Image (cartoon, rainbow, N blue to C red; front, side):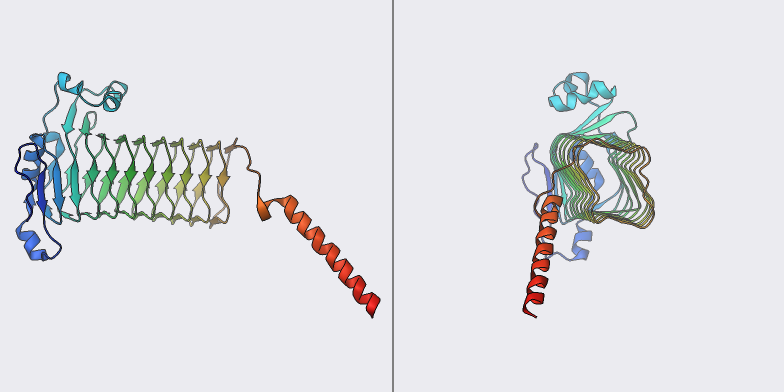
Amino acid sequence: MDRGSAAPAAPLTRHLGRDCSAQEREAQAIPVAELLAALKAGRGLDLNGVVVTGDLALDQLPPLSPERVFTLPPRIQDIIPVENIRDVRLIAGPVTIKDSLVRGTIKTNLTTGLLVINGPVTMTGTTFERMVDLSYAAFGGPVDFSNAILLREGFFIHAWFAEGARFEATALGTHSRFHKATFAGSVSFKRAGFNGLAEFLEAQFSQEAWFAQTYFKLGTGFSGSRFDGLVDFSEARFDREAFFTYTLFAKDAYFRRATFAGVADFSDAEFRGLEDFSKVMFALEPRFARTKLTGERPIPRGLQDPRIMYGIVAALTLFLVWFVFLLKKNS
């Protein structure tokens, strides 16, 4: 096992090589008490190929004093008065748990406070056997859950992502909640699989949002959400109900070749840019009651331009008439 630097400010490091057997990883399992002690000491985490045991309750981190709150990055401080938050806890970061197995729960246990994770969060390739609840967490750096597996609940209620967030090819479990989450940077769920309920109710997407080739197995809700940047649901599949009621699409919205096997409800939604539903498969009649289309229609180019198509048809017609005339003349 690589334990990294022993310096007090260095991240807690535990790396196991790929040649380790499952039995060896279990024998070197890391209890969450060791992780919590490192976080309380202001250290980050750098885990790779390990097994983590026990339940991690992040509300056990000490609250910050008002003086320390004012030393947080400005973009974090800006949201504290907006949300009227008085109870702030801090993980200095970075937090990295790659290609590992987490057996217990991870919870913030917060309903009104805020957990600030100041550095990057990387969970790529890790399997979480139980609930991951990072509600009321403010991620000051990039977040990457790509290729992770969440077997149970994944909750990010009221979470705030200051930079980019990646959940590409992530397998999400029985229930995923991003209710009132804020994505200040771009976010990608490309090729992700939501195997349970997927809730993005009243979520805020400030930049591009990518859901191309994403699979939604159960009910899906984006109602009341706001997409300020381009959003792409191309080739996404919705096996059950999909609700986009009262959703605002401020820029272009692409649903090309998406499949809606259940109810697709866009009632009271507003499209201010291009809305592309070309080659979409609706198993049931979609609902577009009171939907607003206020974006400018794009000018088709190439063969999609009706003027060019009419010209081609006219030319073919003239050629056919001329060809028939020649045949009659020579007969």
